[in-house]
Image (tube, rainbow, N blue to C red; front, side, top):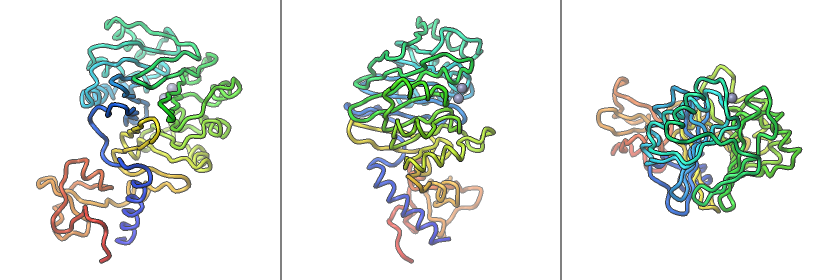
Length: 357
Ligand SMILES: [Zn+2]
Ligand SMILES: [Zn+2]
C-alpha cells in the first residue's frame, strides 16, 4: 500500500512538472496582463466556463439553477464585476439555469448571445427577463461572426442548421489567443458536428470542451481528428444517471492521445496561457494523459494525506500524530491539502520529497 502511494505521488509530481509549472490550487486573482484564463467551473452535471482576458470577461453557460449561488460567489471571488459577453449555448436548464446567479452579482452585461431568440424553457426565459431588466437584449449570431474579449478572438462556427433537438442547435465557438485555441461545443452531437465538418469549419483547437458532457453521441472520431486537441475537458457529475462520460468516448480520447480533465474528478479546471505556452491547474486530483488516466490512483483510491481540522496541519497517512476520525479531513493530493489552507506537519514532513523508508 505504502509503495502504491509513493508511486501515485511520484506520478502526480511528474505529471505536474510535465503538464504545467502552475499545477496547483486554482488562482483566485485576475490573470496577469498578457494572459488569458479559461475556467471550467465545476457545476456537476452541467456546463459553465468563464474566460478572462485583458480585463474583459466572457461567461459561456452558467450551470443549473441550483448553481446560481456558486456562479455568484465564483464571480465575486475572481473580482468579475462586469460580464462583457455571455454565451448561452442553448436553452436547457443545465446551461442557462445558473446564469441568473451571475447576473445577480455583476453590475452590467455587454452583450448576450443565444442560438434562438425565444424558447419555452422556464430557466431560459427567467434569464432573458433578468437580462432585459439590465437593458440587454439577446443577440442571435450568424456563423462566422466574431468579437474580441481582451485580446482573445471568439468566432461562431455553429449551429449551421436548426433542429427540433435543441442540443444540436448549441452555439459552437472557437476562441483564439495567439497560438492557443479553445473549442466550445455546448451539447452539440454528431449531426451538428457533421455539418461543421462538411462545411469546412476551422475546428482545430488546443483544448476541446467535449460535447454534451461526454455523451458517446458527441465527439466522433472524425470530429476529434479534425479538432486534434491536446486537452479535452469533460463537464459532468460523479455517478450521474446518464453514465457520462461514456466509455466509448473515453476510449476515442485515449486513441487520440488527448489529456483528459474532468470536473467530476478535478473540480474547477483553470487553463492559463500567454498565447504560446499553456498550463492547467485543477482543484483536486490530477489530470489523465494519453492512455493512462492517472487520477484514478490518487483521486478515487486511498487518500494521500490526512488533515487535522482543529490544528489545520496535514500529515502523511503513516504519521504517528494522526487526528481522531471525527477531526480528520482527507486529501488526495498535496495541492488539495495546501489549497485548503493546511500546513505540513513538522514530524512526518508531508511536503518534503518522498524518501525511502
Ligand atoms: Zn447539457
Ligand atoms: Zn442540452
